[in-house]
Image 1 (cartoon, protein in one colour):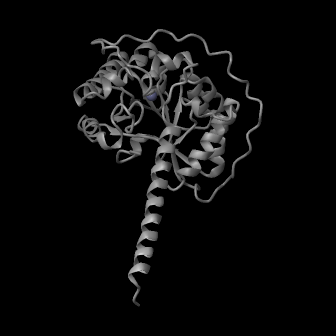
Image 2 (cartoon, protein in one colour):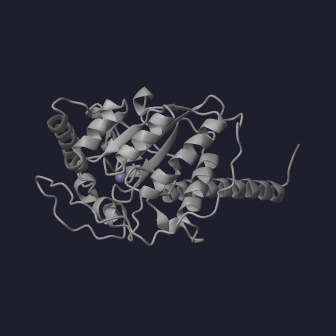
Image 3 (cartoon, helix red, strand yellow):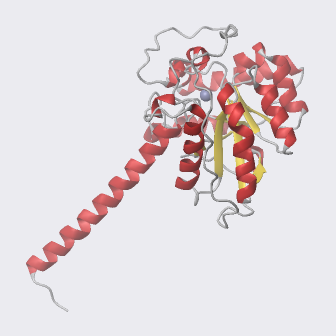
Length: 313
Ligand SMILES: [Zn+2]
């Protein structure tokens, strides 16, 4: 069949437009997911300013890295202006065949912290093992909670020593130093090397300080060269990104919606890696409901040390 030049041009132009739209959609979806699940700090949360403030690209990080990181002081009590959970979230689709028998990896970031024991109690109740990506300074500040993670059969992973983006992502030397400091901290707190060789990049591997996906290669190689596998995430509660709660939902509804939306968005991805922060009291509150929903959907639970490779978004 022969086409006129004009017709060929129109077809090419149409195909080009479709390709452009597909590429743009993919880019937007990726951006939405990364933004949605990003460890954005909540400025109203006092603990956020302690740990995660550097994840916010808009926050000026000017302090020079200190040679010997000091434990962060005890954060002030939980904010009282958190809305009480009132609405009952809609039950999600149970026993979805696409989830039946699949494994999901629960991961808890930024601790250990004063809520970690509550998380461990909940995990025990459902006989689930999880991965805790811990901050070295907090292992030092909350040694008992750190030990409970290991004693109760979970994986103690690395989430850097200080969680300070300025220390981590301005050259791989500083990055490697943070990973080594974390391990030395674990050794000194436990009296032996209780740390696994799994890690999560603070802010994820595509964070803006690192310069996004195109610049992460040397850092991922650095982590791998020290024996670590690195794990981003896909499912999340958005529990460090309250700015995403545009509709002003009660936190429990916002977390629940974020969980369902992100699970649905990534349902065809392997592995499903679920980011939760054990520094957030509202996350601990909703955890049993989320776990029961995952069980109802047919999921099994695994730890990151079972995975053979990095998982990078
Ligand atoms: Zn973090």
